[in-house]
Image (tube, rainbow, N blue to C red):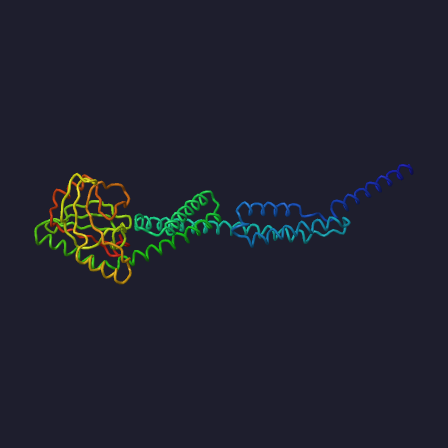
Length: 368
């Protein structure tokens, strides 16, 4: 009987010892915050997917630093004897990492949406600028460097739009900024040149109004050519009857100064001869140079503005063979043959031809 008690006592002692060991191993020794660290890792990964490293970089870096600190402290604690470990810092850093990651993700989403809106607005503004450049300066004789800037600006804008559609917003912004610099500087230079050219508008306006007035007074035809809009207007008895597209000299901007400058003159002229079957089919010869042209030519020659050996030139016509879509003549005014037929039929020797830079002011042009 005593033997049985001894055996039971030993058994209880062993079970108690094992229970104590299990209790100490499982319950009492410190456990690492595995769930919190995992949650921090998932939160950081989610923030990264939301591009917080780009659009909420400061907060994201704080979140990552806290996560890294949690991992470093975990390693330090694991190096200690099991009962001496303390994972409080690991837990604190993990919780901070979670909080910062969630905040970084939210901030990134808001920043990204705002960024996308700003980029979209910038694209719209730049496309409007390109539209204005095309409208005002497509056939305006700009310097080569300005034309190059416009071409490069358009290319950068197109590339920026492609990157925007791909979601590569930082790259898109860089290219859009380049496009803005190129297009804005080109527009400013072109605008300044156009503004300078249109300072003669008051004089052109008087010429055009005088031509229309005379047409009404004489109950006859008058031709007005608007160089900037590439239009030829035919008035009869003071009322506009026809409107045709024209092509001009390659260097049409400004007044004609001398022979060979490929400029289309500006002034009040009249038809002095009619020709058919010429190189350009029907043609109307005008009296360039008139007295005013000759006076200006001699004055500029005496001042050294043009070479002493220069000649004033002549042979300026309104003729056919137009419709090429570019300014190609030596200074003449070209129309499509069918439209030239109309003008040739109604015009006579003595019909006034008024050539102006523009019948619209700068303000009217820009507020079309």
